[in-house]
Image (cartoon, rainbow, N blue to C red; front, side):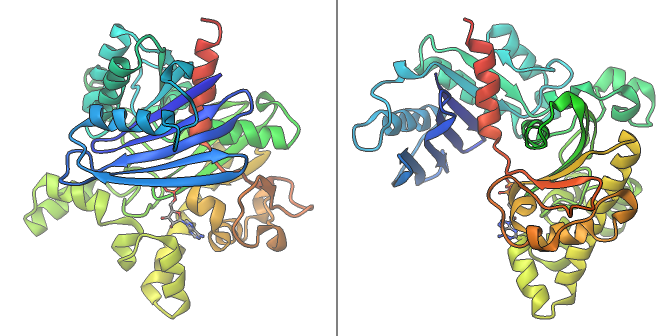
Length: 402
Ligand code: ADP
């Protein structure tokens, strides 16, 4: 079975074509700067371990043209891996916000599209773009089934005590203000696969999944089900991130509005784009920050200290939420590549049963690897995430019996 995974943004379309019989990547790419004077498509074709890259620069008017271009790339004799789109069995779409309407992936039809649209106000930057991707795919791929896989669905198992904010209850009833959580496909993939690496079923273990990329979130997973997660109604909450502030005292916002004579929109942009690591040391890429800290930049060092301290506190909180923890699993750009951050997060955690093995932790890790010491009662793992594969698996589960 061949599945095309689509992640449509406001001016981009990321795609991957996967052969699900072998769970291998056939082609992947991104169409960017849709609507700009000059658009760009970067495409990779994978054959027998070989990678062939093609870049095309030309104006791409809209998502429809972008999707046409990617179809050309995957079907052409030069860059393609299939001879026609008829070989694609299904298309899996990443949709950011499923609200309370979706606790599982869904075959897309008109009522499902309407339900996604209804959640637009909760993710105004993402859901409309995801819907455009769905519309265009429906126009161009004929009868091929389309499936929506939601970032939020894995977190729908949280109980009200975990997802409600201590605000007037009507705000939840009227406006659906609550914790939704994000990165759900990644947390689901990592929780499932760390259990597999431990030789267990997901239902047998409690794990804390630590997704540290540009955005980051931490999730407490009990027996395969999410019980709590650090992101909130929006992806601004939780740990400190590349340029997002994470949890702050909500009263700070009004204070900045007043003292700096800024509008709420301006403050919101600062919290999302000028805060986090960037706010503290001016850089948001952890590699640059380490380099600068090594050269004596105290702000860079402070940024790393703040970042790792916050991750550590969430892990501690989730030990309390779960009662018993079998494994902590790191993933995503920083989680997989950054031994300094992993070591700092796990430092002095032996009281909770976590002891890292410095040698196993050393360096970038690109495969699944246990990095805890033998004496550690809680296993510590690096599990490289694969959100596209998870979306393809969820899509396949829906269409395989059709
Ligand atoms: P996104 O949230 O955009 O998907 P990623 O999961 O790709 O992010 O993670 C991006 C982050 O990973 C970068 O900001 C960078 O700080 C970090 N990163 C990537 N490679 C390394 C590395 N070798 N060492 C430390 N950090 C790294």
